[in-house]
Structures are given as structure tokens and as C-alpha cells.
Length: 345
Length: 176
Image (cartoon, rainbow over all chains, first blue to last red; front, side, top):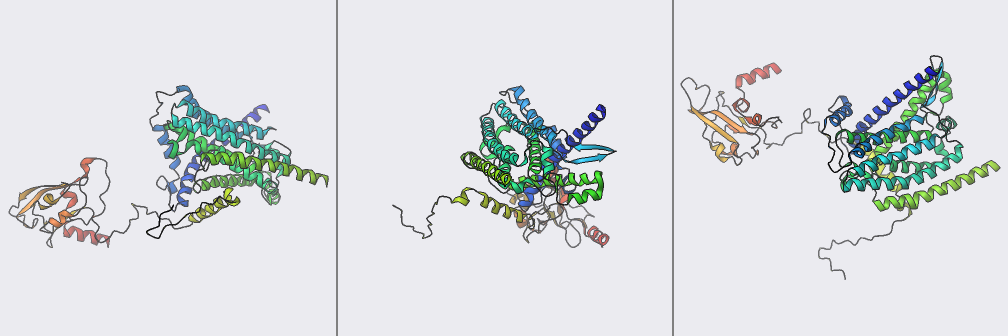
């Protein structure tokens, strides 16, 4: 029994790991394609059909480039930075439920690595660790631009984590649980949380952009002012690790948004589909729906990137502290009042 | 005090403080995203180069070709005027005298035994074709292709001289 359990989890972790890697790799391809489409271009189309081998070519390039460790840098921290960024970005997927319990070979298998009852706190902890990769890398480079990028990354993440946490508190008032699995189950069929928490979702998605360092909040790595920001001194695979970590973060935050606000694997009419297809193929459709939602969010991240210019640093801080945090607090108060009134009626 | 506008085109911009909707950025962001989204369905401007080619203009100057006359003889007489006129010093040649029995190969009594153009030096100005008294050189070819080594950019007669007429006919016959 124990062995079977370990084996099941091992398979799940491996599948998830490979899936995360390939989604991150193909995000780089999609990013270039989306950029091209939005700019009336075609995008990469030389490596394989539709340029589908482009991520492999990029990865190969990253591996075979010369790896430079600047002489003035702190060597261990310089290596630790990208390693930490990559490691931490993988941890987030552990608590995300990708589907309902599925019947496989006469066994009920949950499509979630672990359903800890403080899943949201776990995700928060892991995501806020992500900024250490940037800070350590920027500090260890011993370069003014890198340091500026790292400082910006740290201050931005701290400011936006507050608003993000506050928007989550309002969501928790609605859901009454911190477990991702239960939150996903509560949003059965069309009862998605975004209907009850539209403002909370708006705040959350803005903060998600800031947490993943995506445009319009990509101040830690703005090419124009900081020559690449915290990764100025990085080359070859360490540079690739930072880039990869960014795309994995994007995948994780898309998954979190899909589960918390857009019903995860739930979709209208899922009961009918489940009774039609049975306990094995029904959840598979749910997993497909989950991934459609995740990819839609990833596309949204990219769409925004190729539309909006970067915020100025003071605008970023104004938006975070003077607008988003008061809005999030107001959201909590309104949600609490509405819940109390509805309960009393 | 503001100066009088001499051109009459001066505009005084009013810097109004942003109103509420402008301050929360979101309406402008959604409008911009709508615009970029519509661009996904527009016709792409890209020309996939090696497969597709942009149409060249009438007076496009590309790779040189050394011409033959109506009997298939090389027109060049190796006078060197093209090399002299070349501002980039891209052309060199070695002349030779026509032997008996070579009348079907070369039109004039003197011909270019070696004729080389360095495509890395050439600026495609067309002064050589203007200088040529025998109408032997024209820049009517395609784009000079890329290559890996400098020496491969020095084009000799094997690449420059027009195909003999009978071979050209044979090629056309094969295509039809």
C-alpha cells in the first residue's frame, strides 16, 4: 500500500515536472509568436514546422554558450541566484489540483501532488521566495545595474504582495478554506469565484503581473534603463535559468488564478459530461479545460506585454500603495458586510 | 511673454490633470489591448525571403553578368574600362589574345582570360556597365547570395559569363 502510494506520487511528480518544463519551453515560442502576430509579423518559422523546434534550438544555444563568471562577483552567490530562482519556481505546482479524482486501473487517483490544508499560504511562501533568486543574483553580480534591478525587484514584490494578500483575504471570506482542492470543488460547474469577487480578481491579476516581473511591471529587467537589470552579468545557461524561471512563474500564477477565480477544472455542464463519459474520461475533459484556462491566462500575460509600455518607478509605487492596497481593503470590508447581511437574512 | 508665432502653426498644449478614468489606466489599457488584438487578424507584412521574393524595380542593379552576342560569343574585349571606372576597385582582369579557331568563342581579337569581381567590394553603382563600350557587362542578375568565406565572394568567369545560347535553349526545352 505504502509503496503503491509512493509510486503513484512519483509518477504524478514526474509527469508534472515534464509538463511544467515543456509548457515553459513552449511559452517562449508562444511569446515570440504572439509578439509577431500583434505586430503584423509571422514570427519564428524556420526551425521545424511553424518554428515548433525553436525552444530546442534556443535551449541548445544556451547550453553551448560560454559561461562567464565576472571576476568581481561573489562566485557562490552568483551560481546560487539562478539555481534558487529555478528551484523555487518549480515548487508552486505541487499544491495545484489539475483535475478531479480520476479512476485509473480500479484506483481513485487525485490529480494533485499534495492537498495541504494551507495551500494558499504555501503558494504565497514559495512565490515570495522567488524574489530571493533575483536579489541574490543582482547582488552577487557586483554591478550597479544588476543591483538596481535587484532592489527594484525586491521593493516591487514587497509592495504588491500586500495587495495580493489582501485580495486573497476577501476570497477566503467567501470560500472559508485555504485548501486549493476544496476551493476548486466549491466552484462546481459555473459557480466560479470571479463572479463573487470581480474586484478581488482584478487586484490579484495586477499583482500577479508584478510578482512575475512581467510588463507593465518588468522594472527589475528593463533593458532600456538597466541594460537587462538583475541578469546583466549572466550568460549561457544561468541566463537561461532566469528566463525559464520567469516562464514557469507565469505558468504557476496562471494555474493559481485559474483555480482560485476561474473554477479550475470546473466548467458548465460538467455533471452531464461526467455521467456520460464515466469516472476515467470525465476528469480528463476537466484537466483539458484546466489547461485551456491556464494557456488562456498565459496568452493574456503575453498580450498585455506586447500592448502596454512599462510603468515609471514612482507610478508603480503609487499604483501599489495608494490605489491597490486601499481598493483591496475596501473589497474586504464590502465582502464581509455582504456576507454578514446575507447570513442574517 | 510668448513670442509671436511666425509660421502660424504653433499649438499651445493644455496639460490638464488626468480625470478619474485616466488615472486608473484601465479603460486606456483595454482600448490598447483591443487595438493590438485586431492586429492579430491583419495581413502579415512579412515576405518569407528565400521562398518569396519582393518584386524588383526596372532599374534594379544586382549581380553582374558578362554578355554574349547573338552568335554566342563573349562580347568582352578586356579593355579594362570597367575596372578603371569602378570606384570600389572591385574588378580585375587578365587579357589574352584570340587564337586561330577561337572565333566562335570570342567576338573581339582580345578577350578576358580571367575576369574577377570581388562582390564584397562592389557597391553595385553600375558605373562599369556605363563605361563598357562593348555592352558586355550588365548588373541584371539576382541578389548576390551570402557565403561563409571571403574567397568565395570573388566571382570569376564561371559565375559571371552568361550561359551559351544553346545550353539556355536546352534548359528552356527541358523546363517545357
